[in-house]
Image 1 (cartoon, rainbow, N blue to C red):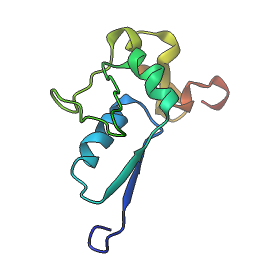
Image 2: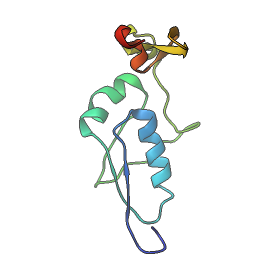
Image 3: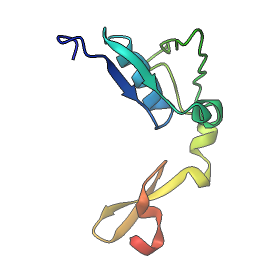
Length: 110
């Protein structure tokens, strides 16, 4: 896209970790036009789930600093039962617990 002058748009409708990854990636894309995100997400549940502080200034977002992507998940969020899902580890089985899991937590489709 850069070779042909085509602007690039990153799109994040996921959580704070993906948001931080988009910020880091976007900082290295010369033809980045913008990063789409859901304002309600970073104003509401991002601070509950992570240490990320999204501070838009003149239409710009700072790249998170710190180790890794510069954001960590909060232990209090990881311990919440409503944010925990049961994942399938084998045929027809649901074993273990992982935060922010998938549809295997739904009893009817295990």
